[in-house]
Image (cartoon, rainbow, N blue to C red):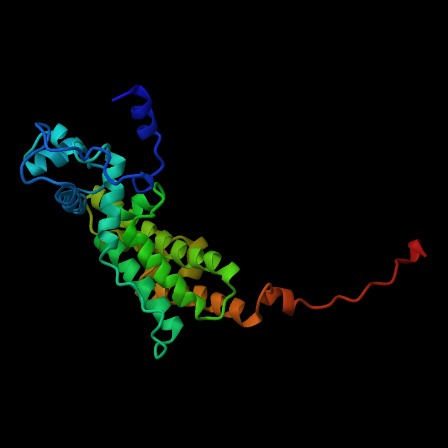
Length: 276
């Protein structure tokens, strides 16, 4: 391998932008391990990430998990980042692509279902939240789901040129929510306490401080909602706000926004006496 080829691969933006999938898939040779392939390595990586989390993941730990040498893994995957991208797209394959041709289903409900499905995926695989901001997320499973949701979104009547921004708002909301939730549970786990124990401790500590009285729940301390991640009810409220914004933009039509149309007309003011 030339130095130029090695440098080019190390600077690669995404494993999915390679001309060929899997640059190390060569003809059978002594470097290969019988019964091992990229799909099996990816599946094992997902299991390890689910069990131990992103911080502890390494190619050596994965090789030990598979019962092979690290070089055997590198025969099929060039680097750790490539494998994380493959694992991310593998779990995104669990998402059901919404049917944009289902005329009997309200597009708003389809967006809600897709958002809840994505949130559920990120809760089952908390490590995935930590990879979404690091990679382009343009694997086949991710793109299939994103394009399916985009087609549903266009059923709202939103102009084509605004669709990508609206889609980004929807996905960014779910990603951000999931990242906060994952960080909360990880912090509790690292501290050796349950999420509920942490909530109870915060309520009893913060609840006695007068500056937080507006967060009170009628004499029993601080409301749990004030000191814990957004739960199912609040996620739904926030999601409805995002969808309502999309609907409002679609209703006001091409190139206009509600605040453009609704802004009051301020009449010109007469000049001040000293200016006359």
